[in-house]
Image 1: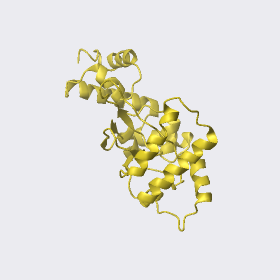
Image 2 (image 1 turned 60 degrees about the vertical axis):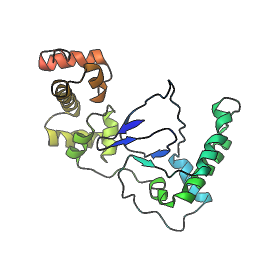
Image 3 (image 1 turned 90 degrees about the horizontal axis):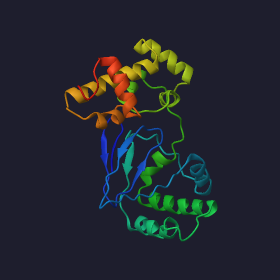
Image 4 (image 1 turned 30 degrees about the horizontal axis):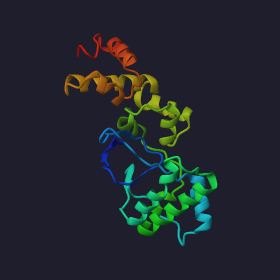
Length: 228
């Protein structure tokens, strides 16, 4: 699996395990091995982590994470491999994993991870919301991600109304109008300079539908993506 967060690329191969951090925009591509792609996702949400701290108090609060990486590769260890194998009956449909037992299994995994990599505490137990960020640099980095304006506002540390107000001041137009034009300009560059195909480009620049992308592209530039 390859992933991109607007800043750097990440690559994971069979057998890897990693943490995908909250409040990070990420686009990823899955590559099948012999026609198959299998993954196991286990979520450590804030309520679970706070309950974990009640059961296993920290001697001191972890520092604010220094790394801004969206994916954190976790050091391999035999206990994690054994833990994954213990989940096989539930993934194969032989057994049912109820909520209480699921939390116990999550707690087991978290204890294993922290035993081998205690530095993960700084990421796992950092419950703060995003601080107010520089709007221009954030949007120039993340405009390709197709997420609601509410999400952009949250990730830049703003309410939706203050996000729209600050956006108008910085870019001189509404978020919707700016995003559409910026994504179309990026698409034009990829098509004309890098000779990419329209079917490869439209998702990458933040459009959900190829026909809609082609329609607004022709309206903007007077020619279809294929003609470019």
